Amino acid sequence: MNASFSQLSLAEPLARAVAEMGYESMTPIQAQAIPVVLTGKDVMGAAQTGTGKTAAFSLPLLQRLLKHESSSTSPARHPVRALVLLPTRELADQVAQQVKLYARYTQLRSAVVFGGIDMKPQTAELKRGVEVLVATPGRLLDHIEAKNAVLNQVEYVVLDEADRMLDIGFLPDLQRILSFLPKQRTTLLFSATFSPEIKRLAASYLQDPITIEVARPNETAATVEQRFYSVGDDDKRRLVRQILRARELKQAFVFVNSKLGCARLARSLEREGLNTTALHGDKSQDERLKALDAFKRGEVDLLVCTDVAARGLDIKDVPAVFNFDVPFNAEDYVHRIGRTGRAGASGLAVTLVSPSDSRLIADIEKLIRKKVELEAFEFEEDRPRGRINTGRRAWGGDDPRDAIEETPPPRTVRPTRRSSAPVDPFFSQPYEASEVEATPTWESASRTNAPRPGVSSNIKTKRKVAALFKPGD
Ligand code: AMP
Image 1: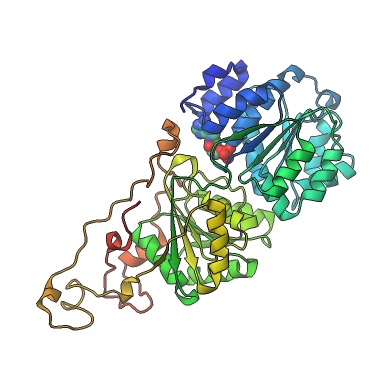
Image 2: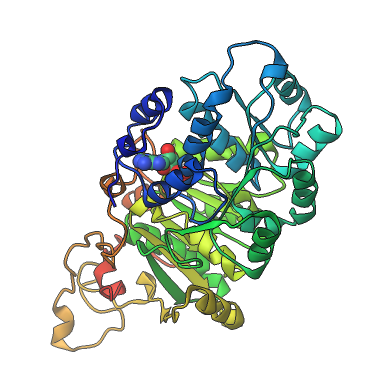
């Protein structure tokens, strides 16, 4: 699918903004959703993060709101006409930034409100008047109660990452917010997964929605190589380090199930010499944004995070995601691995499975409709070594074949396993983590022969990666 934005007859200010973003063609969700939203119909969109869905709803909304454009400074001429609801502060912030970019050549105003920071500046902005309001549910309710936000002229409401909003327990807040909106309106609901709860929400609040799916609901991106390793808790960190080195990965997300586990793991990895930051719900908004920025700039190699904290992070594409803990909720698996292989780039998702996780793995299999192949992991330290280290095998046998060095062919990055992924020239762009070409700490650590547990500092890390991974199916 290579449809161009020029086919849409977007108004000049919007077309100019899109051109300046450097987008050459529409992503599949954009090609499908924009024409429908332009007709004013309700939409139920199944799209994972990173598919370009923000533009898919913002551009047509802005186009339809252009008739209300006003150069007047009077707040009364700038009532809230479109409301975009998102589950987390980071996601709200990112969507708002994108909306601002798309609307920059129009006179339409936009603002974002989310919790964790002072209400006053938000209040001042709301009082000046905004046409597009991006918000998290809790803080929006605060503003409604304080009469800072009046929603009786809303024509469009977008429930983005709806499944996540329900997971976080926002249903009552959403119901309250929706009760303040005019009945006559367009409602757009986007969700990575279509659980029965989401379907119920849609049935209650959407009218004859057009369903748009860019990937089957609950399907994991075809561009993500998914690996499941059976490993004991004590070996998990070692496994992560080995894969990072072996695959020459620059950056990765590491998911854990609890805030406490998150902080602990980040500390341990940091102690082991990896540049790590923790991102969890107990961190202040400021700390979270700083952690995110550091990661985006490439100053941090590993972002250890919980599901809620990671939601909506707009990072173009992370080369790898580790599920240090198997998620309790199978849908989180889909969300987590959606962080990698985004926008068509290939990615790696490694799940560390301990024996007690079998029920959770069964849930994942059911959701992704794929059988999980649990692999044993071979640690470098445990493997027999060739002449490169000792001149003889570690187990000291006399077999003359032992003298033959086992140097595998140099590892090249595995190609994407399936070629059926949506093809868009934009999507074939490589991952760009940051402008800074920093060497990941695990690489410099191995180059400088920093001691690793159980390995002498004289032993150079072997690149036996090719032997570790089976060719793709
Ligand atoms: P989203 O799924 O909306 O979070 O978008 C993910 C990223 O893709 C954002 O950084 C967008 O700026 C970018 N993006 C959205 N649409 C396109 C497009 N048609 N071409 C290239 N990049 C895009």
